[in-house]
Image (tube, rainbow, N blue to C red; front, side, top):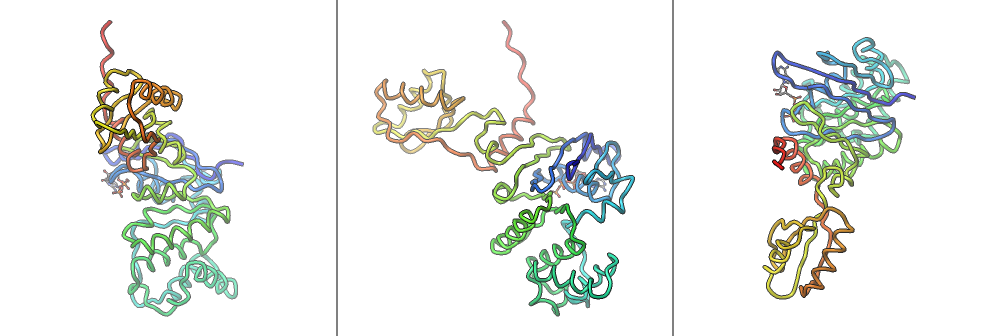
Length: 320
Ligand code: ATP
């Protein structure tokens, strides 16, 4: 079976602006993939091509093995699209709004009623059935948009910043709904700036920067820094003069001093084996270590590290 989403050498230029500059990735069926990038990185542009709303300048995109340019109608039947901004119809209630979309999707009679009822139950919209759709809170509006994108029970959901502007409670509710959809086996491709939340719910994270993919992996490996070559960070606390930690590291090639801490410092080592050696040497050299623990970077730190890494020009090779 072909993956749920395949992008192969995808380019989208706007004149000379290279919004998406040759990206390739795959998202397997039934997985949740977080799409992360700074403002203007190319997320919406990519998602619009996946959702058949824009043409690539070059390259191919397939949804469940179907080419988005050649068979857009077929692809639209397979995807649910949740844009970052969408208009509401004034004077239309929540129920009328969903019913309108169900009609537009070709549902009729009992089946249409059932589809609308099902998505209203799922997205907790039943208490809002008679509320005007342009008089909803941001959280309710997002649930309505999610409901709308689910009417035809799509296999793949493409969600552009669905949590943007939501308060913490509404974010938790949305996350809960996304988790249920993932458990039902839907493939979810979701962009967000709230990295910690994406890390919790995504099987993989795809980082885009200036139209290029700079990372595709799971959140754990990213936090550990194992895929970015970041090594491991340890918090070292000692009894006595905190400065002793940095003094010791300066004379030791296996560790790098990162910053001072109240009772010691933060160091970086290449591997956990090296960490064991460093700890043993510190104790042997008379440092009274009372704490030595590995720190997990949060996703925001990992993201910033990654951007620094890709934006730093490679250093000149050393002269022999
Ligand atoms: P954000 O998080 O701010 O929504 P993004 O990662 O979704 O950003 P895009 O909206 O994909 O970024 O934009 C990528 C680049 O392409 C930006 O420089 C943007 O200004 C440009 N761009 C997007 N759409 C167009 C367009 N229709 N015409 C010209 N430039 C565009």
